[in-house]
Image 1: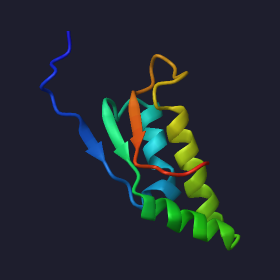
Image 2: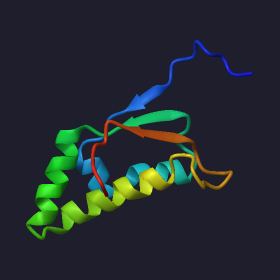
Image 3: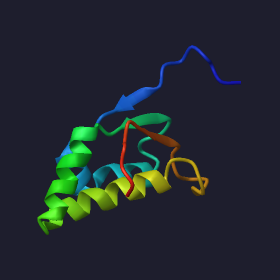
Image 4: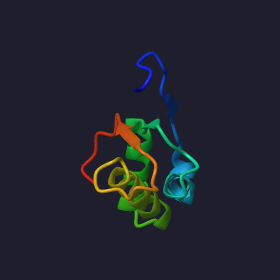
Length: 92
């Protein structure tokens, strides 16, 4: 039985972390687990702006958010960490 008083660690990545793709790699490898990943709307908007200008960094960041959404516990493999994306108001 889980301790209900246990606080969930929160991760708030900036654009450079999302562009690098390191966060989804850490989740897939199981090095990050039982965390809440919060992506602020201003980070999403910056990535969208870069993508709309045709810049690869914007597309990479948006792809990373998509990967993280796919790893949020829905359809993940047993070895993958459970993560939650919140405050990400976008339709990626």
